[in-house]
Amino acid sequence: MNIPYTIEERPDTGLANGKLGIWLFLASEVMLFGALFSTYIILRMGAPEWPHGELNVWLGMANTFILIGSSVTMVMAWASLKLNDWGKHRLYLIATVLLAAIFLVNKYFEYAAHWAKGELPDHSTFLAIYFTLTGLHGIHILGGIVVMLYFLGPGAKLYKKSPEQFTNRIEYTGLYWHFVDLVWIFLFPVLYLL
Amino acid sequence: MHSDQDSIKKSVRSYMMIGLALFAFTAITVAVNQVHLAVPLAITVALIIATTKGSMVASVFMHLSHERKWIYGALILTVIGFFVLLALPVLTINDNIGTPIHVEAPAAQHTGH
Image (cartoon, helix red, strand yellow):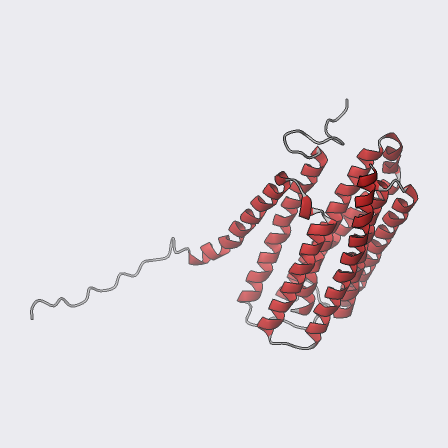
């Protein structure tokens, strides 16, 4: 059975089903991270004092550069498919996975430094919200890596059968990835700088 | 098909430019942080830069600058829902259900001039 509207747009929405689906998913993600950001605001407003300089700003900045770079390679992976350049698409997608992996390795070193000093989530309100927000974000990075590895591996077969459908799937993966980047763009100043 | 490919080629240039701008804004955010501004000003500047960067990612990388109305509709509903959720804790702070009401003793009546 063929699933309708995977490539062509539905006449009522003007969108392929997958695109509307991923945007609705991202809307639910906005609510999830939004709830945590508002929790942060309430906790910070109610705290008599808030720690400064607990996090490594330079590592946080490096991770911001890495995620922005991965967003550029992700959008280039999609644009290469639109330009029928399969080889470049693969290169850009591999680069995105590598950058995402480097981000997680940096995050591991950051977490390890905290744990070595006994700074676990129960140490302070700041560390509790820091580990919650960055941990959830890290899980999203991991999820993105799994999806991209799928499209580099078994999922790549679809390109031969239906290149347009494959291109759409990469576009939806990209939308998710840019959202993950977007969340970090706000997490970095809120947690590391303010 | 050709015009589609031409527009993608033009977009590639803008993706690169936006990527560079995002790098620059990140560096500016950290540089401003090193200046040690007053806390309210530092928060304002950092959030303005983050919002600018976020808008660039959403409008260019996520193609929100030219999307269908269904997607805008879904996002507008999300924003409304988000602000409702944000207001909920404020409502609970102002909520006085269950707290005893203290009735003040009536003031002395003035009976005449």
